[in-house]
Image 1 (cartoon, rainbow, N blue to C red):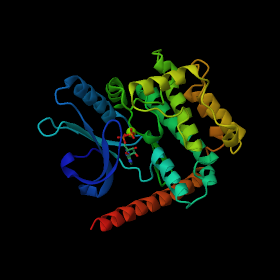
Image 2 (image 1 turned 180 degrees about the vertical axis):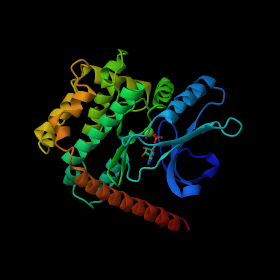
Image 3 (image 1 turned 180 degrees about the horizontal axis):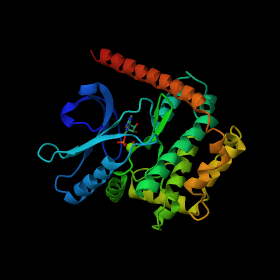
Length: 327
Ligand code: ADP
Ligand code: MG
């Protein structure tokens, strides 16, 4: 189902990232809530604009898949604003980074005990998230030879019916390259072989998935912080290449079964040749063991949704209180 830009009414902001801003929007003809992504583009940078439009055309021709966020259309209006607008399926639990930061905000306010991260990102949910990401990525590669290149918590979205979907495929290549040039917000989930400029395969996405999983269960990006200066980023990139694989501390690892630890360890193997492929990993016991747990995962997603709603309510109250004080 493709949508017309004239039928869209913009609603509240959801978030923003390296490439642009995402808001909620309403598709009036069927009252469907969708996500609207706005990417500013330089007016005369025809090279990037044309490339983006070419990639968006590819997205339009992709057949929908349960693990890919659905695409409803893309628009570029040169005469008005210098921006590209992409209409996407809205995912009502948000992205994994948002879920993770909501979890932290609950802990900081002493509303839930710290230990409960084990319940938010438990073995079941980590397995189902991994399976879904790998299935979506395999579909993209097997059918369209698309490599994602930007797997990270904010590009993995959750729906309250138990959906796990990848977004920002297709556009990622050009955007990442143009953003990487500026040295700001460079993706730190990049694999060692990619940093070293070697041939880039789908195994790079496996590495990024590994880092993402570590971040979910520890609450922290595994390779330490970096500031957005060229030196800070260069230092981080060097650490990825030179230091041993990132891994879970014994304290965290002990909270999860050995098969999950083994799975994460394999994703984070530095040598691309020794790192398993997506197909290998889809046959790992950690994935196979939870393949039939649809019902349980739906319950998990519903619970996450209720927490995300509470957090929205809390932010709204904070906002109202602040406004009140300003009077
Ligand atoms: P980034 O992925 O670098 O954070 P994006 O511009 O791609 O930046 O997205 C910004 C935020 O908007 C994401 O972090 C995510 O939380 C949210 N988001 C993006 N797409 C959707 C969607 N389809 N449904 C719900 N939330 C979304
Ligand atoms: Mg994104």
